[in-house]
Image (cartoon, rainbow, N blue to C red; front, top):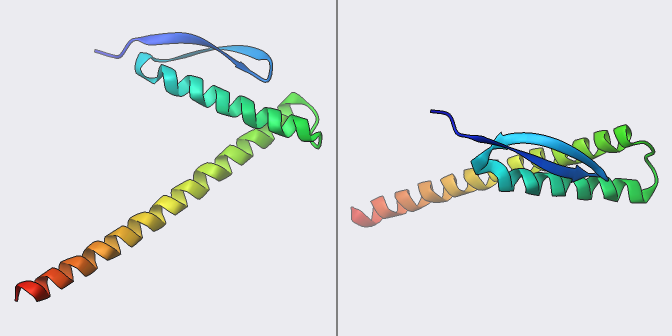
Length: 97
């Protein structure tokens, strides 16, 4: 049985959008819309980009960059953690023998 969906009204850069999502993701959608709205307002306030479409594209590029950068940082942390675990395992093996 599939999860029920809800339709929410979110406001992004003074425009309202009706968006459907699974009920369990309602808060995440609201947070995402707020974050996007903040990013678009930041870009608009700088005055270097004119037009809602261009502001949206620039915000999408910025958010995409943040996502990719965070993903790379998580990979680095994961690799560092794995390396540390391997060192600890090797040290424990020496200690046991």
